[in-house]
Length: 401
Ligand SMILES: [Zn+2]
Image (cartoon, rainbow, N blue to C red; front, top):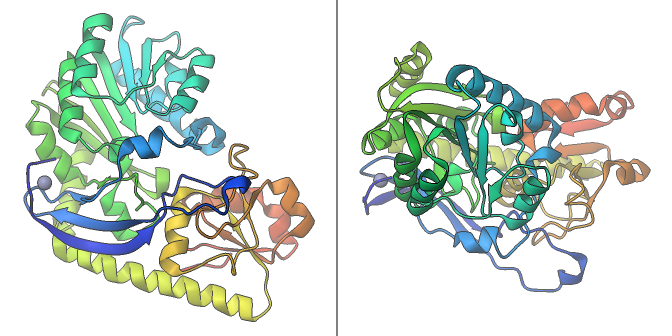
C-alpha cells in the first residue's frame, strides 16, 4: 500500500505447499514445491502482509483453480444478501454499470442480472468459462490500472466497482486503485470485502494465512490508502464470512460517514490493532493453539479413535501443516465440491472423497478443516452426530462437538 521497505516479522509459519494445488493420482510421485510463509508488518503504513510472494501466474494460470464459489451453498445465499444491499443503496437505473473484480463463476454478479449492466474480471480461465456459460460477461484478466481505463472507455464509468475475497490476492494494490480511479463514476462506490486482521487476532485464526493471501487488512490501512486516490471510506462493517471479513465502502466524499464505521475505527484504536505488539501477541496465541490441536488429536488417536477431515479447503491445509497433522492422523477428507473429489491433498496425499463414499467408512471424529463452516457442517451432519459421531473444531479453544 506504500513504498515502504522496512518490515518486521509478525509470524513465520515456515514452509508450505501452494494450498490450492491439489494433486491428481498420476502425479503423486512428483516432487512438490514448498515455499516459505512469513507474515510481516510494514513500518510505514502498518499493513500486515506477505513480503516474499509467489508469482500470481503460478497460482491462477498454471494450475486449475479449484474453488468455484457457487459450489458453496452458504456462500451463494451470503452473496444474495450482499448484492441486494448494494442494489438498494447504490443502483438507480438498469443502465448503471457494476464491475466485479475477482468475479469467480459469477456467484455475485448473477444477482444484478437484468437490474444493471454487469462485467466480471477474473484471471482464472476455468472459472471464467463457467461464468460466461451462465451468461455473465467476464474477462479472463488481472484487473490493472490499464484495464480499468479500457473498461471505462468502452463501457462507460461504473456506478459500483467491487471485489470480494480477491483484493488480498493482488500484489499490486496501487495499480488496482489506479484502475478503480479510472473506472469509477464521479458518484460511484468502490466496495471491498477481504479477510479482517482484527478478526484473525480476536479469534486466533491463522487458517487465512496462505500463499495467495498477500495482505491482511485493517480498517485503518484502507482509510489511509484510499485517501491517496481521492477516495474516502464512508462505511465499514465486519461480516461473518470467512470467519470474520471486513467490508468497506469508499466514494469521492459524496456520502455521509456511518456510525458503524466510527465504532469500528474506535475499536481498532482501543485494541491497538495496528501495532507490532498486537502482531506478536497473535503469533504466541497461534502457536499455542496449533500445539493444543496436535495434542488433542494425538490423544484421540492413542485412544483408538478414527479421524477424517471435513472440508478440503485451503484454510484447513495451513492448520494441518502448522500443527503437524499429517496423513497418519486423517484417513481421508470429505468435500462437497465435485471438482475436488478424487484428488489428493498436497504433501500428505490424503485422498478427498464425497460424503456418500465416506458413509461406508465413517470416522469417530470429523476434524472440520473449513472452520468458518463449522456450524453449517454440524447442522448438516445431525444423523452422524446423533449416532455418536463427534467433530473437532481446530481453531480457538479446539472444541469437540
Ligand atoms: Zn507499507
